[in-house]
Length: 420
Image: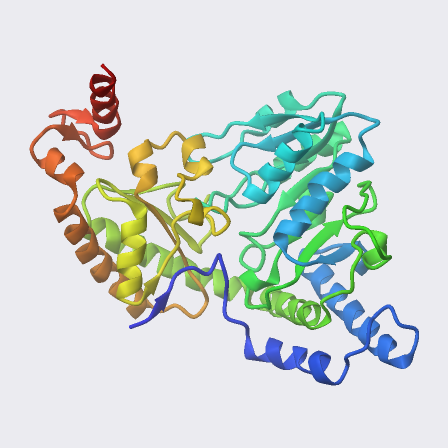
């Protein structure tokens, strides 16, 4: 059996989306900036796509929708574009400590140029306290950035509460909706969001297109120069086929959102209940399935073994999962999100992420439970940590027995002896 549980990194394109894109490869090949009829046909298609995206997120007008190459570019444009546009007012930013790398690294880039940033801590479930956001805002603050749903642990943030605060303070709010778009309702006006970004390839659209919503109250300058495309906010010829496909994928996602989310929630509960009944010393990172967690995400730490071995072993039996964000998983470093929620380092190294889609089935969940239980047993049988746990040298962090030190404490002691 083949089971795909990495839908946060990519989803299969809907056939009807692909069909909608086809003419813009072969027949409607004009440049939307051209003044002749070939350009006009393409411009009309882009307008339709903007209208579809605007409707999905309840924007006031399609003119508030800008297309980029992907979500990472949208995040860069939102963070840097607002910062540069408002630097005379102030050079202070406020972000949560668990934002996506595209946000955090954009902030780090600005810090090297003289900006300052307050990073808001989160609780052990990854939730931002709106009161902490309020306390961090100063007269020099020009942007607050808090994502809708965390990309690692699926925590749904209190965006509407934060949006009320930023509106009262007159500070633009940027919300990264990469992990939520197509799966949770998004109403930019109810959120109080001035900027929102997401990518259609996470909800059955094509890769190569990103969306940035910006309302008229948020000043924004371009960070890519050389043309007047996208209202002068993003220079470069538009990826017309991908934009057209992304527009249709947005329309379908809005129509099917309730059914898709409910289906994922049923599978999420079945998967988690099955795994925790079969595998001892297994931790769910982030909130329990329910109103505080998006229905597509399961983030697990299997104690005494590393995430990379789990991922590769699952792949061998046909199950595709992730180990950290797709933007950082190649680095083999622990997720900054897991560090921010205070997860033990050894548990963070044993982390994998399973993200569900609309086409997954109950039979697939059962196969994953049985397969993963066998893999964990096999890997623990080869693990020195598991051997030391069974001998009482180290203890479990998830279910302490009181027989020994935690692996982290044991490793620190061993390291200290070696130094001497």
